[in-house]
Length: 268
Image 1: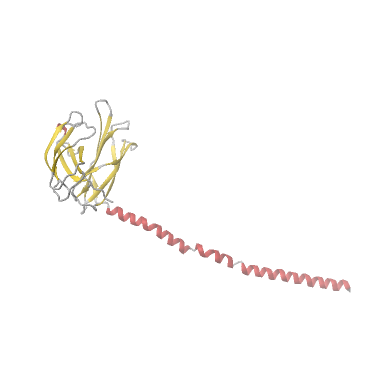
Image 2: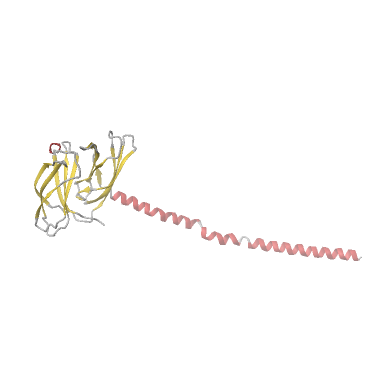
């Protein structure tokens, strides 16, 4: 009898323990679904899509800016290699840029890659000057450099120019030039002499005078300049002589030339 009561009591205790365990399981199942709901809120897909749209905005803006700058054209480039009297090799490059838009353009210094005929890189010229800096619609400026040649082959060279142009924020100013003469130099090829007059009502402290030299085919074969460091008062006139570090040119090589005088201008 006692064994029967003991077994019955034991069964009741076991039943109560199982009920308690099952009740605990039910509670855990109810609490668990709430955890992922709380964690999922910060990584909602909608937030990710908004971030992607934001990153695309600068790209679209850049494309629009690029289209605005496509108001110029690059003409036929010119590259040649020559040796001086001590057999040092020099390379001469010229890149014409014409303003094909409706507004004045401002040109910055650029980079020109010199490639061999197979497309491999022979030499890179950086900070190549361009004159004049500001050009009107239809006007042409020239990137020009003459420096020692680092390459090995001189045949089939071609240029890959990297031009920097934007709409001008500064005025287009030209000074009057006169009494021009093209002369042979004993050591530096040819030179141009003449006078420049400040035909504005403002004194200038730094005036650039640039001479572009062309062959019979109209290609730029030389570019020389003079910098007037003395102040040029309004209405005043002063002489100049252009020159360059080294040149293989003689007067007989030059079929035509132009001289442009202007104040040095930097655009921010």
